[in-house]
Image 1 (spheres, rainbow, N blue to C red):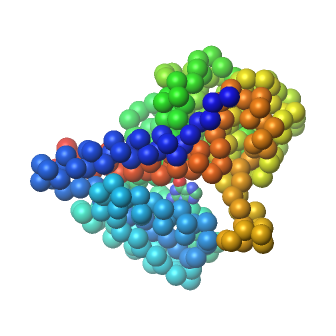
Image 2 (tube, rainbow, N blue to C red):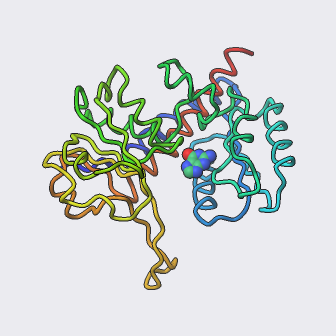
Length: 294
Ligand code: GUN
Protein backbone atom coordinates (compact mmCIF):
# COMPACT_ATOMS: atom_id res chain seq x y z
CA UNK A 1 0.00 0.00 0.00
CA UNK A 2 1.24 3.46 -0.91
CA UNK A 3 0.04 6.48 1.01
CA UNK A 4 -0.99 9.31 -1.31
CA UNK A 5 0.70 11.97 0.77
CA UNK A 6 -1.13 15.20 0.00
CA UNK A 7 0.83 17.14 2.55
CA UNK A 8 4.14 16.24 0.90
CA UNK A 9 2.92 16.81 -2.67
CA UNK A 10 1.19 20.07 -1.75
CA UNK A 11 4.47 21.28 -0.25
CA UNK A 12 6.26 20.39 -3.50
CA UNK A 13 3.67 22.38 -5.48
CA UNK A 14 3.93 25.32 -3.08
CA UNK A 15 7.73 25.23 -3.42
CA UNK A 16 7.36 25.33 -7.22
CA UNK A 17 5.01 28.32 -6.98
CA UNK A 18 7.32 30.07 -4.49
CA UNK A 19 10.13 29.95 -7.07
CA UNK A 20 7.84 31.38 -9.76
CA UNK A 21 6.74 34.19 -7.46
CA UNK A 22 10.36 34.99 -6.57
CA UNK A 23 11.14 35.17 -10.30
CA UNK A 24 8.18 37.51 -10.85
CA UNK A 25 9.46 39.77 -8.07
CA UNK A 26 12.94 39.77 -9.53
CA UNK A 27 11.56 40.88 -12.88
CA UNK A 28 9.77 43.71 -11.06
CA UNK A 29 6.34 42.24 -11.83
CA UNK A 30 3.30 42.38 -9.63
CA UNK A 31 2.85 39.20 -7.58
CA UNK A 32 -0.46 37.26 -7.54
CA UNK A 33 -3.10 38.62 -5.18
CA UNK A 34 -5.83 36.33 -3.81
CA UNK A 35 -8.81 37.59 -1.84
CA UNK A 36 -11.13 35.44 0.23
CA UNK A 37 -14.61 36.45 1.33
CA UNK A 38 -15.96 34.77 4.44
CA UNK A 39 -19.47 35.48 5.69
CA UNK A 40 -20.18 34.51 9.29
CA UNK A 41 -18.26 32.46 11.81
CA UNK A 42 -18.60 28.80 10.83
CA UNK A 43 -15.69 27.06 12.59
CA UNK A 44 -14.57 24.87 9.68
CA UNK A 45 -14.79 27.76 7.20
CA UNK A 46 -12.73 29.98 9.51
CA UNK A 47 -10.06 27.26 9.63
CA UNK A 48 -10.02 26.73 5.85
CA UNK A 49 -9.93 30.42 4.96
CA UNK A 50 -7.25 31.10 7.60
CA UNK A 51 -5.18 28.33 6.12
CA UNK A 52 -5.60 29.67 2.56
CA UNK A 53 -4.52 33.17 3.61
CA UNK A 54 -1.53 31.85 5.60
CA UNK A 55 -0.41 29.77 2.61
CA UNK A 56 -0.50 32.88 0.41
CA UNK A 57 1.82 34.73 2.77
CA UNK A 58 4.24 31.79 2.91
CA UNK A 59 4.67 31.54 -0.85
CA UNK A 60 4.94 35.28 -1.48
CA UNK A 61 1.41 36.05 -2.76
CA UNK A 62 -0.51 39.06 -1.59
CA UNK A 63 -3.72 38.13 0.18
CA UNK A 64 -6.78 39.89 1.52
CA UNK A 65 -9.32 38.39 3.89
CA UNK A 66 -12.73 40.02 3.81
CA UNK A 67 -14.61 38.79 6.87
CA UNK A 68 -18.25 39.90 6.87
CA UNK A 69 -20.77 39.41 9.69
CA UNK A 70 -23.31 36.59 9.42
CA UNK A 71 -26.15 39.15 9.10
CA UNK A 72 -24.64 40.52 5.84
CA UNK A 73 -27.42 40.90 3.27
CA UNK A 74 -27.31 39.32 -0.17
CA UNK A 75 -27.28 42.82 -1.63
CA UNK A 76 -24.23 43.82 0.40
CA UNK A 77 -22.38 40.64 -0.52
CA UNK A 78 -23.18 41.17 -4.20
CA UNK A 79 -21.84 44.73 -3.89
CA UNK A 80 -18.61 43.33 -2.40
CA UNK A 81 -18.34 40.86 -5.29
CA UNK A 82 -18.74 43.72 -7.80
CA UNK A 83 -16.06 45.65 -5.96
CA UNK A 84 -13.65 42.71 -6.21
CA UNK A 85 -14.50 42.24 -9.90
CA UNK A 86 -13.56 45.89 -10.53
CA UNK A 87 -10.39 45.90 -8.40
CA UNK A 88 -7.49 45.55 -10.84
CA UNK A 89 -5.10 44.58 -8.04
CA UNK A 90 -7.04 41.39 -7.22
CA UNK A 91 -6.13 38.55 -9.59
CA UNK A 92 -8.52 36.01 -8.14
CA UNK A 93 -10.90 35.57 -5.25
CA UNK A 94 -13.12 33.05 -3.60
CA UNK A 95 -16.36 33.30 -1.69
CA UNK A 96 -16.12 30.62 0.97
CA UNK A 97 -19.07 28.21 1.04
CA UNK A 98 -21.45 27.50 2.66
CA UNK A 99 -23.03 30.94 2.82
CA UNK A 100 -25.68 31.78 5.46
CA UNK A 101 -29.14 30.44 4.54
CA UNK A 102 -30.62 33.87 3.72
CA UNK A 103 -28.14 34.35 0.84
CA UNK A 104 -28.70 32.73 -2.55
CA UNK A 105 -25.39 30.96 -3.19
CA UNK A 106 -26.07 30.51 -6.90
CA UNK A 107 -26.74 34.22 -7.37
CA UNK A 108 -23.46 35.11 -5.68
CA UNK A 109 -21.36 32.58 -7.60
CA UNK A 110 -22.93 33.77 -10.88
CA UNK A 111 -21.83 37.33 -10.07
CA UNK A 112 -18.12 36.44 -9.77
CA UNK A 113 -16.08 37.51 -12.81
CA UNK A 114 -15.18 34.17 -14.49
CA UNK A 115 -11.64 35.50 -15.09
CA UNK A 116 -11.17 35.90 -11.33
CA UNK A 117 -13.07 32.75 -10.34
CA UNK A 118 -10.12 30.75 -9.03
CA UNK A 119 -12.58 28.33 -7.40
CA UNK A 120 -13.88 27.39 -10.86
CA UNK A 121 -17.48 27.51 -9.58
CA UNK A 122 -18.92 29.90 -12.20
CA UNK A 123 -21.01 28.08 -14.86
CA UNK A 124 -18.72 29.45 -17.59
CA UNK A 125 -15.71 27.79 -15.95
CA UNK A 126 -17.54 24.60 -15.00
CA UNK A 127 -18.78 24.36 -18.59
CA UNK A 128 -15.29 24.82 -20.00
CA UNK A 129 -13.98 22.15 -17.62
CA UNK A 130 -16.69 19.74 -18.81
CA UNK A 131 -15.75 20.49 -22.43
CA UNK A 132 -12.04 19.89 -21.85
CA UNK A 133 -11.22 23.55 -22.45
CA UNK A 134 -8.55 25.46 -20.54
CA UNK A 135 -10.08 27.02 -17.44
CA UNK A 136 -9.93 27.18 -13.65
CA UNK A 137 -10.63 23.67 -12.40
CA UNK A 138 -12.10 23.60 -8.90
CA UNK A 139 -9.36 23.11 -6.37
CA UNK A 140 -10.49 19.83 -4.81
CA UNK A 141 -11.00 17.83 -8.04
CA UNK A 142 -7.90 19.52 -9.50
CA UNK A 143 -5.94 18.41 -6.43
CA UNK A 144 -7.14 14.82 -6.73
CA UNK A 145 -6.09 14.68 -10.40
CA UNK A 146 -2.69 16.16 -9.55
CA UNK A 147 -2.15 13.64 -6.75
CA UNK A 148 -2.99 10.75 -9.09
CA UNK A 149 -0.59 12.17 -11.71
CA UNK A 150 2.32 12.75 -9.38
CA UNK A 151 2.07 9.22 -7.94
CA UNK A 152 1.65 7.85 -11.49
CA UNK A 153 -1.46 5.92 -10.47
CA UNK A 154 -2.63 3.87 -13.45
CA UNK A 155 -6.21 4.95 -14.15
CA UNK A 156 -6.42 4.05 -17.83
CA UNK A 157 -9.57 2.05 -18.58
CA UNK A 158 -10.24 1.52 -14.87
CA UNK A 159 -13.64 1.60 -13.23
CA UNK A 160 -13.92 4.60 -10.92
CA UNK A 161 -16.84 4.88 -8.52
CA UNK A 162 -17.42 8.40 -7.23
CA UNK A 163 -19.66 8.66 -4.17
CA UNK A 164 -21.41 12.03 -3.91
CA UNK A 165 -22.72 14.36 -6.64
CA UNK A 166 -21.88 17.79 -5.18
CA UNK A 167 -21.14 20.62 -7.61
CA UNK A 168 -17.79 21.18 -5.86
CA UNK A 169 -16.37 17.65 -5.81
CA UNK A 170 -18.40 14.62 -6.93
CA UNK A 171 -19.81 15.96 -10.20
CA UNK A 172 -16.57 17.60 -11.45
CA UNK A 173 -14.27 14.71 -10.46
CA UNK A 174 -16.59 12.27 -12.25
CA UNK A 175 -16.19 14.36 -15.42
CA UNK A 176 -12.41 14.78 -15.09
CA UNK A 177 -11.79 11.06 -14.50
CA UNK A 178 -13.80 10.21 -17.61
CA UNK A 179 -11.88 12.59 -19.87
CA UNK A 180 -9.03 11.66 -22.16
CA UNK A 181 -5.53 11.98 -20.75
CA UNK A 182 -3.13 11.26 -17.95
CA UNK A 183 -4.72 10.13 -14.66
CA UNK A 184 -8.02 9.82 -16.53
CA UNK A 185 -9.69 7.63 -19.20
CA UNK A 186 -11.74 5.93 -16.49
CA UNK A 187 -15.15 4.37 -16.83
CA UNK A 188 -17.02 6.32 -14.19
CA UNK A 189 -20.04 5.51 -12.06
CA UNK A 190 -21.44 8.40 -10.04
CA UNK A 191 -23.20 7.12 -6.92
CA UNK A 192 -25.28 9.25 -4.57
CA UNK A 193 -27.85 9.17 -1.79
CA UNK A 194 -30.48 7.56 -4.06
CA UNK A 195 -28.17 4.84 -5.38
CA UNK A 196 -29.75 1.46 -4.66
CA UNK A 197 -26.77 -0.68 -3.68
CA UNK A 198 -23.56 1.28 -3.20
CA UNK A 199 -21.66 -1.73 -1.89
CA UNK A 200 -22.38 -3.69 -5.06
CA UNK A 201 -20.78 -0.84 -7.02
CA UNK A 202 -17.81 -0.15 -4.77
CA UNK A 203 -16.90 -3.84 -4.81
CA UNK A 204 -16.44 -3.54 -8.58
CA UNK A 205 -14.39 -0.35 -8.34
CA UNK A 206 -10.69 -0.07 -9.19
CA UNK A 207 -10.80 3.51 -7.89
CA UNK A 208 -13.16 4.91 -5.26
CA UNK A 209 -13.55 8.62 -4.63
CA UNK A 210 -15.67 9.19 -1.55
CA UNK A 211 -17.03 12.73 -1.17
CA UNK A 212 -19.90 12.14 1.18
CA UNK A 213 -18.98 13.65 4.53
CA UNK A 214 -20.09 10.60 6.53
CA UNK A 215 -17.35 9.45 8.92
CA UNK A 216 -16.15 5.86 8.38
CA UNK A 217 -18.77 5.24 5.68
CA UNK A 218 -16.50 3.17 3.44
CA UNK A 219 -15.81 -0.12 5.21
CA UNK A 220 -13.36 -2.92 4.44
CA UNK A 221 -16.12 -5.22 3.12
CA UNK A 222 -17.08 -2.59 0.50
CA UNK A 223 -13.65 -2.52 -1.14
CA UNK A 224 -11.88 -4.99 -3.40
CA UNK A 225 -8.21 -5.89 -3.02
CA UNK A 226 -5.85 -3.45 -4.72
CA UNK A 227 -8.35 -0.60 -5.03
CA UNK A 228 -7.23 3.05 -5.11
CA UNK A 229 -9.01 4.98 -2.36
CA UNK A 230 -9.46 8.77 -2.42
CA UNK A 231 -11.09 10.13 0.71
CA UNK A 232 -12.51 13.63 0.31
CA UNK A 233 -14.50 13.63 3.55
CA UNK A 234 -13.36 16.01 6.27
CA UNK A 235 -15.74 15.79 9.23
CA UNK A 236 -15.28 17.21 12.71
CA UNK A 237 -16.34 14.63 15.27
CA UNK A 238 -16.97 15.94 18.81
CA UNK A 239 -14.49 14.46 21.30
CA UNK A 240 -13.97 15.98 24.74
CA UNK A 241 -10.69 14.13 25.19
CA UNK A 242 -9.12 16.29 22.43
CA UNK A 243 -7.76 19.74 23.14
CA UNK A 244 -9.92 21.32 20.42
CA UNK A 245 -13.00 19.37 21.48
CA UNK A 246 -13.12 17.45 18.19
CA UNK A 247 -11.08 15.31 15.86
CA UNK A 248 -11.01 15.28 12.05
CA UNK A 249 -11.91 12.15 10.15
CA UNK A 250 -12.70 11.10 6.60
CA UNK A 251 -15.34 8.93 4.88
CA UNK A 252 -13.07 5.89 4.94
CA UNK A 253 -12.58 3.42 7.76
CA UNK A 254 -8.86 3.95 7.26
CA UNK A 255 -7.07 1.18 9.18
CA UNK A 256 -8.83 -1.89 7.74
CA UNK A 257 -9.41 -0.36 4.27
CA UNK A 258 -5.73 0.65 3.94
CA UNK A 259 -4.77 -3.03 4.31
CA UNK A 260 -6.64 -3.84 1.08
CA UNK A 261 -5.83 -0.66 -0.89
CA UNK A 262 -3.00 -0.20 -3.41
CA UNK A 263 -3.06 3.59 -2.88
CA UNK A 264 -4.96 5.56 -0.26
CA UNK A 265 -5.21 9.18 0.91
CA UNK A 266 -5.10 9.81 4.67
CA UNK A 267 -7.36 12.30 6.48
CA UNK A 268 -5.97 14.70 7.48
CA UNK A 269 -3.00 15.08 5.13
CA UNK A 270 -4.46 13.80 1.86
CA UNK A 271 -6.87 15.70 -0.37
CA UNK A 272 -7.24 18.67 2.04
CA UNK A 273 -3.75 20.18 1.62
CA UNK A 274 -3.91 19.53 -2.14
CA UNK A 275 -7.03 21.72 -2.33
CA UNK A 276 -5.13 24.70 -0.95
CA UNK A 277 -2.12 24.11 -3.22
CA UNK A 278 -4.35 24.00 -6.32
CA UNK A 279 -6.18 27.17 -5.30
CA UNK A 280 -2.77 28.86 -5.18
CA UNK A 281 -1.92 27.35 -8.56
CA UNK A 282 -5.17 28.77 -10.01
CA UNK A 283 -4.32 32.19 -8.57
CA UNK A 284 -0.91 32.06 -10.23
CA UNK A 285 -2.64 31.13 -13.51
CA UNK A 286 -5.06 34.04 -13.05
CA UNK A 287 -2.15 36.46 -12.63
CA UNK A 288 -0.40 35.08 -15.71
CA UNK A 289 -3.60 35.41 -17.75
CA UNK A 290 -4.24 38.95 -16.57
CA UNK A 291 -0.67 39.89 -17.41
CA UNK A 292 -1.00 38.49 -20.90
CA UNK A 293 -4.12 40.59 -21.64
CA UNK A 294 -2.80 43.82 -20.12
N1 GUN B 1 -16.25 25.15 0.90
C1 GUN B 1 -15.80 23.89 0.88
N2 GUN B 1 -14.86 23.74 -0.09
C2 GUN B 1 -14.74 24.94 -0.69
C3 GUN B 1 -13.92 25.43 -1.75
O1 GUN B 1 -13.13 24.71 -2.37
N3 GUN B 1 -14.08 26.74 -2.07
C4 GUN B 1 -14.97 27.55 -1.42
N4 GUN B 1 -15.06 28.81 -1.83
N5 GUN B 1 -15.74 27.14 -0.45
C5 GUN B 1 -15.61 25.84 -0.07
